[in-house]
Image (cartoon, rainbow, N blue to C red; front, side, top):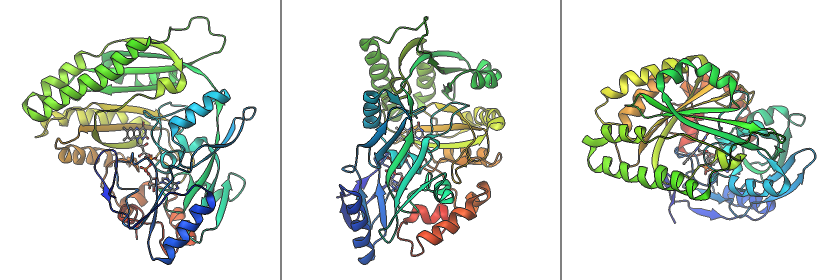
Length: 434
Ligand SMILES: Cc1cc2nc3c(=O)[nH]c(=O)nc-3n(C[C@H](O)[C@H](O)[C@H](O)COP(=O)(O)OP(=O)(O)OC[C@H]3O[C@@H](n4cnc5c(N)ncnc54)[C@H](O)[C@@H]3O)c2cc1C
């Protein structure tokens, strides 16, 4: 059976598939694949736009290796099986009165897939999902299990949290969660000029700040989500279910999907449709449990590239994009998303060692994107931008080695743990070297 990712940008025909239900079964599958001379890839939910999980060798589908193993509400430490999706993790944490401190836009990824590519949300004082990990277990090429944390094998811990599955198969992940919290969400259109002028103020002054900008428009949709103290008196009301359905399902997916289909059939209309989409942006303020605010349904298929850039370079990147996108031969249907994150110390994390901003560009599935994405990459190259490991880019190990100070250390550890290159595929060969 052919494997395909969510975006339809990668597919593969694994020679063998395994559905392990225990950690021992993961080790057995790896040993069996090795003796058959097959490379091994762990499959998450297939939500990477890059072919990071694609394999013609042995595919380990971890969807049956899911669920919480242990949880301590007092310390917030929760250990989960690696195939657990963020959606089921959030549901389990709700029951425990806990929550992840930050999340990205969707919850369909597995915890291991999400951390392995450096998945992140937004928040100048918060890191990506991998920074919420305090320990993990990894099944190595010989089937042995190794545990790591800040105290136990700290080098492996610094490497394995964002490792693209290149060091082994993660079997369990221990996360530091926080007491469940609600967010006050404020979403409103604003002139792009104002957003860029107040970028520093918005990033510093909100727990979670991001904005979306339709490339031909002068307005952006600014999202500012802030934690509500348990004793807060002035709490915005929750969004009624009908309005949630109307805005997220009908407007952001149904109606937007229809606009995209029209644009794909009649590309000459894309610029006016894009302006129309920007003009329908409206204000909403509400409160909800954190993951109900972070996560939104994404049913309209698209392709995406995202680069991390040093935070003080982000406005230059946007100015370049704004100047050059209108000159592209093929018009762009989807908005640009801008987020922020704190620096971290994970060797291959895009936010390694610097305060970061993220710029993500998208194009509706089926519309030409190559020239747009090339232009985007050249703009980011000028500021030393680092591509998201799970989103489309063309960089190889030679380029990436310059961008990550600990790249040689990561490769040394890879040589030590996987000298025979069991955990490899063409994407990993490109980004990490053979
Ligand atoms: C609609 C959409 C929205 C998105 N939103 C965001 C966002 O807000 N922020 C963001 O940063 N990213 C976002 N992404 C990207 C996404 O979070 C990442 O690509 C993530 O890796 C997908 O997780 P997955 O479970 O689907 O992993 P997969 O794509 O299946 O796999 C990713 C990598 O992890 C490896 N892997 C999986 N499981 C294991 C394991 N147990 N052990 C070792 N390696 C493993 C795979 O081999 C592969 O190399 C989005 C993607 C989509 C399609």
